[in-house]
Image 1 (cartoon, protein in one colour):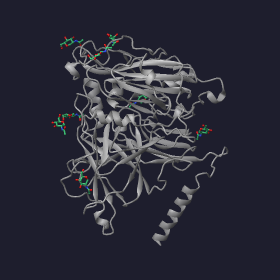
Image 2 (cartoon, helix red, strand yellow):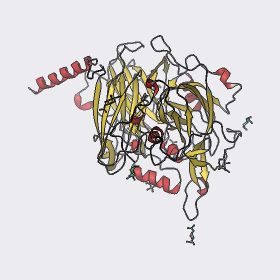
Image 3 (cartoon, protein in one colour):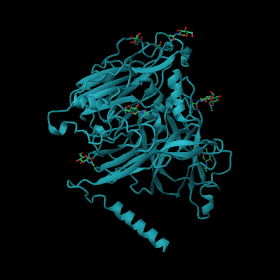
Image 4 (cartoon, helix red, strand yellow):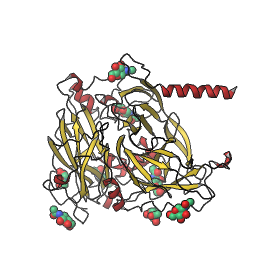
Length: 582
Ligand SMILES: *[C@@H]1O[C@H](CO)[C@@H](O)[C@H](O)[C@H]1NC(C)=O
Ligand SMILES: *[C@@H]1O[C@H](CO)[C@@H](O)[C@H](O)[C@H]1NC(C)=O
Ligand SMILES: *[C@@H]1O[C@H](CO)[C@@H](O)[C@H](O)[C@H]1NC(C)=O
Ligand SMILES: *[C@@H]1O[C@H](CO)[C@@H](O)[C@H](O)[C@H]1NC(C)=O
Ligand SMILES: *[C@@H]1O[C@H](CO)[C@@H](O)[C@H](O)[C@H]1NC(C)=O
Ligand SMILES: *[C@@H]1O[C@H](CO)[C@@H](O)[C@H](O)[C@H]1NC(C)=O
Ligand SMILES: *[C@@H]1O[C@H](CO)[C@@H](O)[C@H](O)[C@H]1NC(C)=O
Ligand SMILES: *[C@@H]1O[C@H](CO)[C@@H](O)[C@H](O)[C@H]1NC(C)=O
């Protein structure tokens, strides 16, 4: 009886999946509804039990799976005595900036007990994205996959994919994450490093008490799988590899790439990478292969330098059910193809191999000419310790961070609302379009003196349709570091990058304006620069920031306004009636 019921459920599920075109609205667009309750859940990892902020009690959170073109409505109910917001990371949000999520940029937070419906349509995007909280450091545990199934078959071979497997990296703190953030804010020092990295919420057997919390993926020999890899870690860029297997990259940030095969990948917080994995090895007696992720370290400050591992398990006819979810006995050998933590050479080569697919069906729409170039430094900063305070940053000062020497302060009302309603606000549209002072940004000796910054809420404002280039220039303030810069509301094309200082005469001559990688988060080389181009074709207010959460907290961010165009279709839609007030 039970089994018949189960079969029925499966049948219904298959039918629902097979009929994605079934129109649910007058316009023929399919509407997909989701309910997110932001709530506490007691979770135990690494010998520590604590309340963890979750969506629907799940850690990591539930997967959102939709089809290209679907209208998505997520009813978010905040069941905690804190503010919250959710960001749909990488979703373009064409004209629907109200649904983007960053607190005080596009909305005021959802207060305790309140509900807000995020309503947006997924246009011309397909692949893996993700969602996460965008208030304080809540995204440490409030995150999940956002999968967009394509309307057309995958443009890569082999077309037969046995299964699609999300692999989400995260970070676990034994202590309370809010306390970690508060401590950092109070003393201006570096935050406590995490105590473990996780794969789908599981740290794996290299950490204490964690053998039972190990990710094990069963696969069949000869079959090909699509891994949807997401880096949801708060503060760390990661290398990932699977022992004895290669990975073929086919998509990044929900954009198809020219496929290329690699021994391992680099993935920064905010980025996603789809890879094909073929089970083409002959397993030994236990049938297991180690997969591992560890950080790419470019900072001289303390970092979590540990390694998380999980396993690929080849299905054998003798595998009994009880064995399936147990890792093999130690010792564990890390994949020999996993890069060392300071392997900048691998990081650079890997990133330089990424290319847009640029086919007839998926053309690469990189702006070949530009209307405006903005050059901005990205820096860490130090401010003197206020009198009678204790400061724990470098040389007993307070850490900050900035773009073009502007350390971003969030206003008290969302910039989008102020902009839309023409309210008097704290922000001004005069973000400097060049570094205010020219110096050797990437000279050898780290700068440790005169590292002050300015504080404010300056935004860059451009007319609709501007072909914009932004050059992101790392600096040697404190230490040169790789920064994952994320742009909301737009994908961009990484037309060039290099080490040292950007040279406006020479470097543009070497740009790739044929098939550069298209993404929403760029890893700006440590002690170097990256040039990104985008069409400012999405009216609204957008956050641009470093996706290392500690750097965002210190002000490594800016606002970016795209004005509405002349046509009705080029203007921001009016705000939804349930938009949270400030
Ligand atoms: C969602 O947004 C669309 C416009 O993009 C609007 O027509 C629709 O009424 C909205 N639905 C809800 C439930 O707010
Ligand atoms: C940060 O780490 C230190 C040293 O391990 C510890 O004493 C302190 O309690 C931690 N702070 C928080 C907020 O977890
Ligand atoms: C995996 O590769 C290592 C060398 O990196 C080799 O020693 C080992 O035998 C291989 N394992 C299997 C099961 O092929
Ligand atoms: C990680 O960092 C700690 C503290 O700085 C150091 O003692 C340890 O050797 C490092 N481990 C690795 C694997 O680099
Ligand atoms: C700093 O502390 C001293 C001694 O407690 C006190 O006299 C002084 O007024 C304080 N200064 C400020 C700016 O709070
Ligand atoms: C910047 O400093 C580096 C290291 O000292 C040096 O190699 C480079 O030539 C300098 N660049 C400029 C533009 O002065
Ligand atoms: C940044 O601004 C501060 C405060 O005005 C100033 O002291 C500092 O020299 C500026 N730094 C740079 C690199 O422009
Ligand atoms: C939540 O956000 C509102 C609106 O910005 C603010 O007034 C309130 O103080 C915040 N509450 C908490 C607990 O942070």
